[in-house]
Amino acid sequence: MKTANVSQLRRDFGSVLEWIADGQQVEIVKRGKVVAILSPPPIPPAKPKPFKLPDFAARRKRIFGNRVLPGSIVAEERAGYRR
Image (cartoon, rainbow, N blue to C red):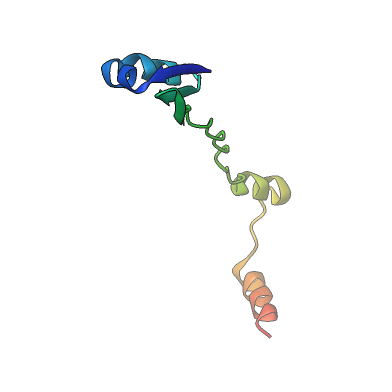
């Protein structure tokens, strides 16, 4: 862990900031006593992969092929579910 005093922090904040950007913690000392500890932010969690919906058209074609049901059968099936 690196150490910097308050006057160094005021004079040369750029180098202290580089230490923090490199992943090091820096103790800020005033009159021989630690008054603060600066540390880099925690590593953010990895983003989850985007959810991809399955290809329903390809699945329907794989199950039913090119078969087409007449409208009367579809109407009868729908009527049966409305009870």
